Image (cartoon, rainbow over all chains, first blue to last red; front, top):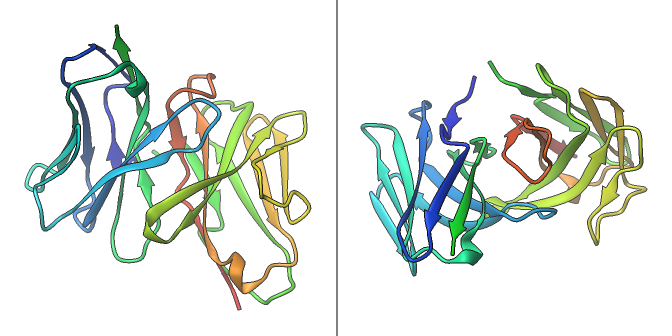
Length: 111
Length: 117
């Protein structure tokens, strides 16, 4: 079963506006969450992460929010830039275990 | 249910032996599958692209003779770690694009934990 879900396969956002990518999870043991960005013909590269002891982590234009009670996390990109166009994967893990990935959301930034 | 499976989920082997890991797409066909290795701090390295009916494409620095990839059918790709050594111990994860476009969204397998003694 899909323990990590990204229900929107695609998202289009105007350049300069905010992009919000969502992710839901079901396994309450997950305590560390990550976002990866993937360009064509490349592997996913790490973008930003958040531990379950926090509800927000910010790195430049990227902010990840975690709502543990709702088992939901989101990635905010503001302002969105054309170079942000890519597929974004959320992933979750706990302890020293493997990553569990969502299926990804393709973000297209419209100039 | 899970749409990409991996077998085995965990394997322990002795140094010098070979280990085969299977990646299956369960309810869709995948002409392309990807193999990754998970490193500490959750970094993910793309090892190779598995292509049904042709040779795999390996990323720079990945030894193709050590990590043998065979895309036997439209639903199965295998990764064989030959002459495994303790430094090969890691999680190995596969993924397959479910929409047919290898640049698009993917289903990831549950991963295989390889421990080489």
